[in-house]
Image: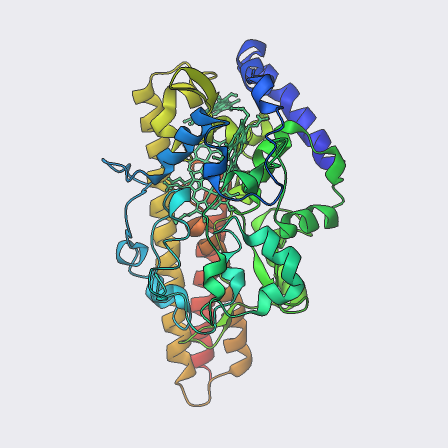
Length: 434
Ligand code: HEC
Ligand code: HEC
Ligand code: HEC
Ligand code: HEC
């Protein structure tokens, strides 16, 4: 209930700031009701997007735009084939020493590439991050067949090897209509159990979600931080029990005593953050004003002869007129330079935090080699580094380069740098003590 009130409060604030007219356009925007509410007659098990092609041709065409490789690329939103993040951010290889992300890590691409980017042809993995130990869990956000497989297999889904036998052939379609819509009524729905479970643990009543909340929650099925919970059959789990703030998620992991990997150089127990778009968005100016992910990423757009909610999930800077000018009256050029200014500052901050974490790792590694090192202090240095790197990673793994919540990004980066430098000093002291 608390969250519902935040939304209502947010709407009032939004009206106050932006002006009733502008906000009205977002919250009660017209949709072609006769189509939206029409029963398609398709079976509930339908996952193939082509099944909806003749029923909603404009939506299908819009959806197919996700297969485009876009030129020219924007400065921070990519959509380019296998643009390596490890090459752009050299310190990442040190930060993730000992885990799969140090082998290969590329920029995100559109929803139609999600399967191709994991499973290549001829039974080979399309990324070095996939190996014999990889479970089906890795497909959680990559394929429309996942919800039905979980229903069929129960918890064994999370412990079955992806590359064994024909297992990977069960994943046929990338992100599809059925991931967000009831295939028959086309109502928005949540298909991923981890989101339902996380919201339920937060005390949110799933029956009372508003339309505007659903317009973000369909995205929060995948665009969130998660882990594989060893205490619960390795199920995909969201660390939200204390809230969405970086410190609250960190406190959750501390309480669980959870680690994703042992660092190859420091031997510290580490966390790996994943794309927390939904979490970082919470508390931003736009979230407080009542906006949902769909307001910017799925604006009302002309598609052929009709107007629909865009199903081309890309940078809103490519749909600036439809996404932003309902509220902002500044020119596109002016807004672009504001967005880039924020992103450049965040990029610079992330690089500084990344290098501070690298320095902490080097100091811990050096101290480890000292005979008679103070092991208690060394462990304290490792603990500081664990927290520091988690905060850097939350900011780095998020895909908007800070735009979604500039203030929260800059605070999280500052915390990371501070903790990393404390870790470095502590490690140097540990090594200097006889
Ligand atoms: C079933 C999981 C899933 C859902 C639901 C989902 N996404 Fe995604 N999304 C992904 C994955 C996975 C990628 C990265 C794909 C890749 O790099 O191959 C992605 C990529 C993106 C991108 C980057 C596209 C690019 O060209 O770089 C945007 C933007 C995006 N999603 C927005 C959204 C929005 C907005 C929603 C909700 C309306 C949403 N997504 C719902 C899984 C999902
Ligand atoms: C990542 C989630 C997601 C996927 C995948 C998705 N949609 Fe949607 N769809 C939405 C959202 C969000 C809305 C806006 C609903 C609202 O405002 O009530 C929407 C709206 C619609 C509507 C209502 C009319 C409109 O334009 O607002 C139709 C019809 C529709 N989608 C069809 C499809 C079809 C067909 C596919 C597959 C080709 C598909 N959708 C895939 C999230 C999704
Ligand atoms: C106020 C508008 C707005 C809202 C609301 C919003 N975004 Fe974004 N989003 C942006 C902008 C602007 C960017 C940066 C695009 C760029 O760099 O060109 C972005 C970037 C992204 C990207 C990376 C895109 C890429 O191509 O690499 C993803 C993924 C994404 N947003 C998902 C979400 C999700 C999920 C939500 C809801 C929790 C959300 N966004 C809410 C405006 C918005
Ligand atoms: C429904 C209205 C609405 C839409 C749509 C919207 N914004 Fe905003 N935006 C706001 C409000 C409200 C604020 C906070 C008050 C302020 O600072 O002006 C804001 C603030 C901002 C800020 C300054 C604060 C910050 O977070 O840096 C930028 C930049 C911005 N918006 C860019 C965009 C872009 C780019 C888009 C389109 C992708 C967009 N907005 C879409 C309402 C909107």
